[in-house]
Length: 123
Image 1 (cartoon, rainbow, N blue to C red):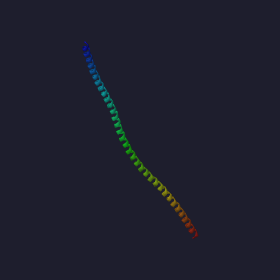
Image 2 (spheres, one colour):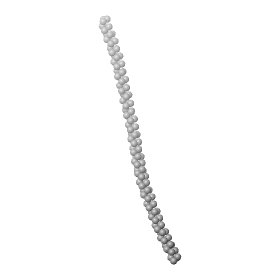
Image 3 (cartoon, rainbow, N blue to C red):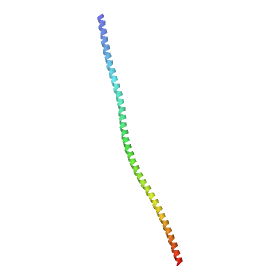
Image 4 (spheres, one colour):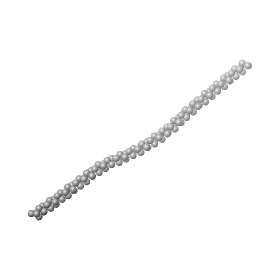
């Protein structure tokens, strides 16, 4: 009877050990699945962040090129405007010069008229 009880006890221990092994294997498999799911979820986020960073880098490069082109175009406009401003100043100078010449010629004309009249009167 005692040996019978010992065999039953050992049989139950073996059954419990097998049951614990099965549960341990199931727990390990579940934790592996959970870990894999978490890693996959994180990888999706990391991949999305990488793609976003790539897009941002491309857009930043494009913005830099656009800004450089804009700066060059602005410089060209400044040169044109400076030339236009100089031309306007020159026109102003030419107009002033023409007025001076016109006034001088009027003075000379007046002097010649006076001289002519004086000469006519004296004759």
